[in-house]
Image (cartoon, rainbow, N blue to C red):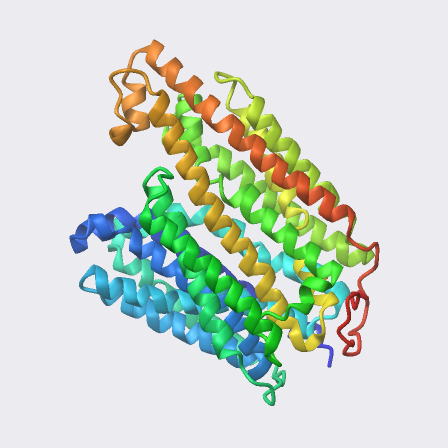
Length: 499
């Protein structure tokens, strides 16, 4: 049943608040990480504060998506929010790194629901044509959180202490919970269907091994040691077993029929391109700018800000356009082309140019990515049976997150190895910081700038190629129009992509 105008507005406010809460948590905590680790006396283990959260949120995406289909999105959404708030309380009460890591696992599970369920709810209660506009508004929480999160985390840590980085979630979350109880409608699930426990366990093992292996390889500057080989083998074997399970069970966790549907498959490819092409490198751009353009940390932050701001404006504008026209194919075509062009510009920028040059280039990447980031979720949902809305939404999100995590580790390892091999005499890669470089002679600074440019240029070219693959994929999207009304439950076939 369509929602009334006031109910839809209330729902959008509720989902936007929850999405912002989930997106903000990661960026706020990252700023406070050093303080947290020092206070708990666990500097060497501080990465587990992030790794435990990321692993839990990634592994639980397909599980929560399927549970939403079976039990109803409202129940999973409210349960995720409650778990997130309870885990935030426990994080702030943690007395050592072990307690904090365990609480972060629970918080990561809740965060997966906060990220996934708003999109699934939109796919369940909003007609296909309106979804790009609504999803773009909710999706705006992500770039806004990137912009304000680091500053907010620093302010809270300095003013109230690091525990309030977690506790601040509670009053905001309680308001969001009250709104959600009122605004999120009751949508019945398909409780007669069985949950794929074996598939969930095996996929969890595969994703965990993949993420851990990539993290270990990155930490060792992409030296392929025994732990990395074992992790890669476990991930590959578990993935093969998972596929065998999904082929045999009646209700698979990730229905493989999605991959036989051209529209859904292309949306999955495009989502992977976003994770690999943008999210893998954006965290390294400030260091690159500090070294290659010899700026301060504060000034270097202008480049990712330009990227995120471009993404924010683009996602809102294109979401509105897509809902207005019902057409969607042009947005990923233009978006991937713009992003590929921005990355190619970054690859060939000579060091020493004014800072506005990389800002413009990375803004192009942000505008291009934002042009289709949320639209492809709406398109994938419209191409799937309504009973699979949660699982198809989760699949699109999962491949983006796994692609981002894996590619980030690879990019970090390549940068670390390349810089270590080419550093001028007298500089140690283990203790290299922008401050050390800026305190060196002008000749050494110029050498380091050239080195970082030489190391990052092939990476930017490689990521531009990833977006070029996205251009080809986008050209293969069916040129259809999003429907103004809910479609009847389609019969799943190889081309049940009538959107």
